[in-house]
Length: 102
Image (cartoon, rainbow, N blue to C red; front, side):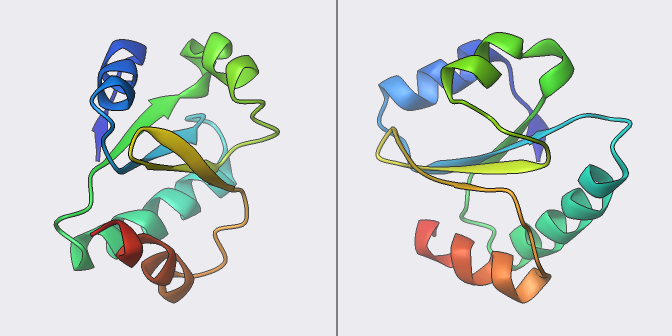
């Protein structure tokens, strides 16, 4: 997962891409666990595009998409927000959610 800027996010939306975006804050312990689970899931799905953004620097994005808390995984299909996930649960759960994006 690479760190994305708001411009990279907007470009992916304009081009109607299918992708996921992981929102986190660096000091959040739950975010660190969620990041590891997401990384394992993405290793199993190399065709899935996923970026990440530090919410400390993306307050406008948080308001625009009404982000309730971190960690948050936003699923975009064809450039439109399809789903927001706050409870990452497990690697198998994330794998099942993400395999539809491959």
